[in-house]
Length: 530
Image: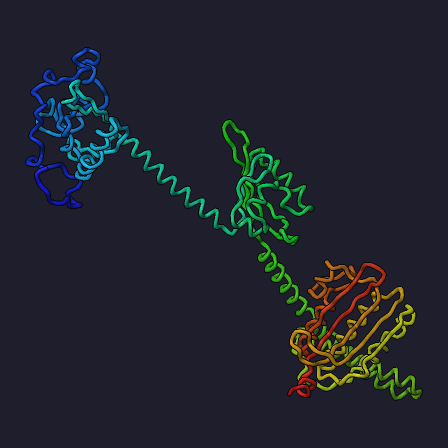
């Protein structure tokens, strides 16, 4: 090449200008007959055979000058001349190809003796680059003075398209694999027997087990025992080529049951052979929780409307009964009788108060007051005295050694009645009922207040039921229970600045339930402040 200037990017793929082309090699000739090609001279390879090859074939001198080019190569570069006198192979390469030929290809070929499937872009008759693959070998004369380079040239357009398509497909596969790997859904690939073949990050989150642990498991072992029949049936449907969608429950490594949606897709190969399946499993626990909350909200809204309607309807009869009790009081002269009438009036007033406030759906009363817990306990227990005696229940009320509680009296009374009523239901066969109040501290905050305990020695509550007792509409009393008692109790305790918890035992010799109420009393807390 005559110029020592660097090649610009915009010149890299252009043909070499005429003045830069080689003027020919001293080994070139006017015709093929002047070439010393041993294979042709010996008759092993005929000129007609070379000319009829579908691929290009050229013979070059050591510096790249073309000594011979067959018909396929001449057609590729767009000339009928033979043997392309006065040109070099490099003249038909792009600028980048020239540099590669001179600096990499030719030295490697001389060193190794042959090269296979070397990629170039050659300039065709319309000067557009055409991808080619070159197989090359070095042939030296017997006296080692002359060197010939034999190049077989194959157009690689289709191969380049295949390679580009393969690269695009590989990139798409890698993108999809990354999406699957990072998905928050569990995405599994399984064989016909249900053995796990692949396990993504989402599956680790849903099930709490690693990929290595998962590959020792089978698909059905991931589900709760109650779901096994459905899962086995679903896998059988996959064998018939059917897709399956279902709602189910799986087991987390911690033992927790997780609600999920499952989508199973069969993998079918020709001719209709079932070779495996994939599973997409989505954690729907949060969705189910939201659905349940929405359903409960709708139920509570309905209860609120019903409660308001009932309160409106019973207010007039309650007023009439109140008047009748007032009249009855004037006819009763016996002290014990008067006491019963007064108790009836107080309870009727409480019923009227509850009706007016429509359970928890009306704002609470406006004023708090100091409530003597001993008197309240005696009053509440007196309502159940007859039933407790009949059931042989021993009652222990220990509320006299505590300070008065600053609260809404009517609401606290309703709380106590609900808890004593539940305790009585648990003691129909006898036992002990304890109602105790004392000054205490909040175990979490350390602040002082008053703790009230309502305990019974009944049969106890199972752990699975205990976790739901404060939820609305949850009941174990069948058709006789509304499922609202403890829910209302918890709400009323919260309105009075308190918290409520429960513990229970239903196994062993000592069974029973304890309801624990703590009210952070501002008066006691102020006295305790430094």
